[in-house]
Length: 105
Image 1 (cartoon, rainbow, N blue to C red):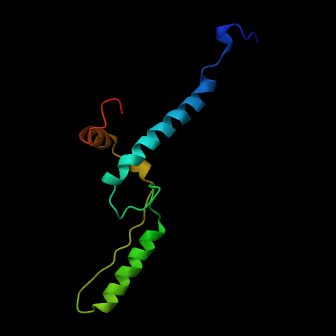
Image 2: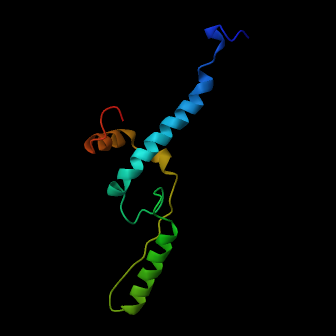
Image 3: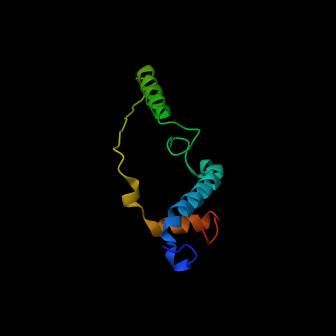
């Protein structure tokens, strides 16, 4: 194909690179503020937190229950599902707006 002819260029071939750059920029911007909105018990998706911290929390809770048998306690374990399939996008838009991320976010 003639490289001097603009119609021979396929903008979609650049889309993947542009998208990756944009998403990396957005992720870096969000990292700075996400910890303000994500509870300390949520240990995934943040670089300073690890899933193994939850295991330590469970072990500490079990030890506490054993050390205090006079207190009634119940542990409930819930199965995590793929969250992206269950997202209420209207609710998410509202939250983003209330957190002042801006209309273009």
